[in-house]
Length: 426
Image 1 (cartoon, rainbow, N blue to C red):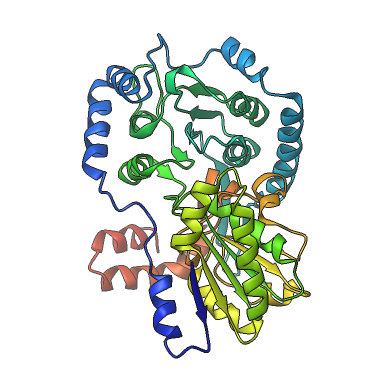
Image 2: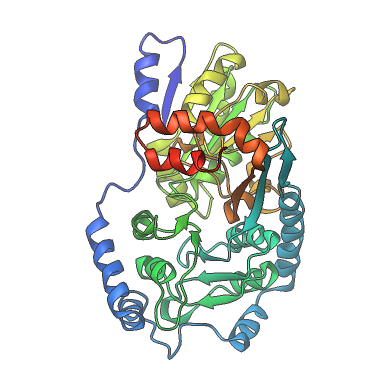
């Protein structure tokens, strides 16, 4: 765990190195992924069966899960978990419903009619991890916005090692309105969603997190289909003053550290004494934490505590780090929030732990990582929609603006462009 102080002479150099630290997987899997994608394109279902048998030790007659199987497995999900999923789904749906955009239609001052229509995609594929990161909450976050905008087909792929699946994932799929589920994972699942096989129809877009092979497969099929983003390790940055309970902040830092050894947790505080107490609280919690092995590796290798002279000094540092999650545990968090330009999602005040946003807050928890919050936003209904613009000129409107179009077309050396306008003018 790194300790940095803005008053140190070498702070700028150390902070720049820290910002640019690469935490993503450094092993190049692009060649292997390319081979898998090519194989699935050429051999379809046969390739899917071969890879699933090899990697997941699972060889069913059909990879599409039957309605009966889904109902039977989902029924094994404990009732209190189902109730919590329904509570989360209601809140997520309510927030995303308010995001639905309005169409634009107007006639300008020269008589040209202009418009913009928002339309839903036809179909989406959702990749759901099946290993350590088997999270039904993530399925809700990916599927519910698609359901809200009215997609006709919501397809889910999930690896089933040895034929096993988390019942809560299937219960979440029922709640979220998933229409098809296939028990496949890895790069081969991404290839099947992008190119289709004999039994799996292709989709328009692929969303959802996965391991390095899944991330690389999404990168390689982009253009054939749309993708949401390339997900990296989780991140949290907590800005806290000395009025906080250090144990609360320690739990918040570890809430992301336990995701992955490459996850990153950062505390920025204006109190050296509080920093020491928070570090001690992290060490104490780790002694008995069930996810100690992963959380310790993350905290020790990628964690950091940054001591600033005042909390206003934290803003430019935060904007450079562009973290996935930001907690502002201060008296008037909105004052700091108004200055933040680069963050995936913000959690304001001492009683808003990031974990609330992971499950039942309402905003989406699929967020930009690896500093991509500088230019990207979290998943929303907009990711499942596209914009179609329209123009309509009558004769008078074309005469008014047409000459300028002809001039520009001729300046660009495109005579047919110019001619298509000129032929309509008197």
